Length: 125
Image 1 (cartoon, one colour):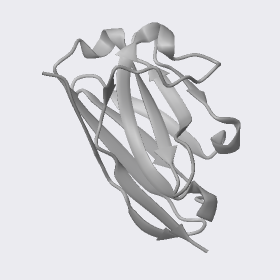
Image 2 (image 1 turned 135 degrees about the vertical axis):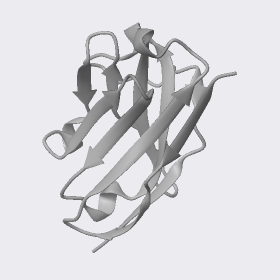
Image 3 (image 1 turned 45 degrees about the vertical axis):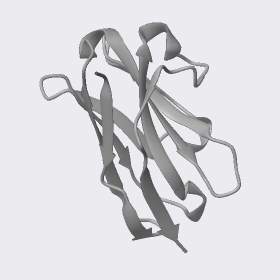
Image 4 (image 1 turned 180 degrees about the vertical axis):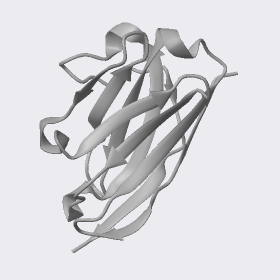
C-alpha cells in the first residue's frame, strides 16, 4: 500500500522558514517523482515544485524559485520542501504526491497517482 505522510507545517511570520517532510512507503522510491502542491482557502490547488528521484532534478513554480528547495533522502524515502522567506500568500495546505517520473519537468502538472493528507502552513504578516 502506497502511503505519503506530510509533516512540518505550522504558523510562522513573514520572512521566516519552514521545512516540510514527506515520508513515502509502498513504492519504488528512486523510480518515481514527488510533487509538492498547495491549496489556499477558496483557491484551486497549485503545483509548487517537483523532484525526479532518478536524476535528482527539481523544478519549481516561478513564484517560489530561489525561496523553496526540494530535496530527498532516498535511504529514508523522505522528500523535503525547505521554504525560506515565507510570505503570507504562501499560506495553504501543502500536499506531497508521488507518481511516474515523467510527471516532473519544466511544466508542473498534477496528474500524480498518490497523495498525502496535507499539512497546514500559515504565514502571518
